[in-house]
Length: 317
Image (tube, rainbow, N blue to C red):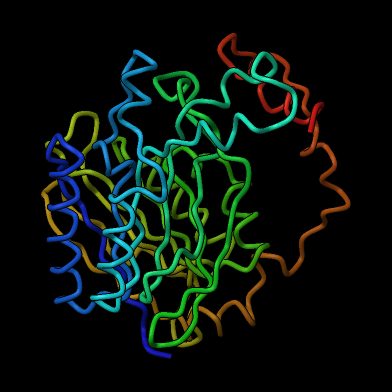
């Protein structure tokens, strides 16, 4: 199988949905010209990661996954014969209001979500994933958290690869990448919108290393407030038989500029590495991890703004 080429679209939003659609299409076309198999957008591209304080403004900014915005990218993916990871503020009120329990039980669940839709080269939805670990200490407290991590089989034209996603803050929880690995992910696509400094980049390096998985992360460029570019890609291969000692799994780290940054993932070598090395699910002891399922939180980790919506939903579903 040939290398899978991912185009990291480290680009600035225009300020409007229509402008972002037009600019996104233009950059997808450029990515295809560069030989990309997958084009990946930064976090919440539809609105340039805007989260208005007023709830009604927030809802007006959201788009449905069956909207013209998403449908145009599905058409484009089919036209270009290229997969697209399009990100957006997803309207989800009508679906979530139908859940049992009533609105008084789950007021948070009517809010929009921070979402990526992976579209294959035929224009079909592979999965739609909403950010599980919303930043509830900030503006994302006004968003609905996602419920599950998904892995889909992506036909790239060079062969099939199993792909999943995390979004930004998800990367700070080892469980996110671990679940995706356990579900079979070989490549994790990570839209981002925050300063990517050494510690956050190190988190991605760790997630790739400990799960023997490829990770492609795309951020907004330095001109975007609270962002600084530095999109990255890691192949997860720490040891090669022909090398002495370990190697850095970093394949590419962008600068702060706007542009398309290319990462070629050696899928066959990654698979061979997974078949012989000691990480991932090779020697795990899940029977010893029961504490990971505990809902208890004690000092020094108690936060007044921590959402309890998960516990309420578990009681009534």
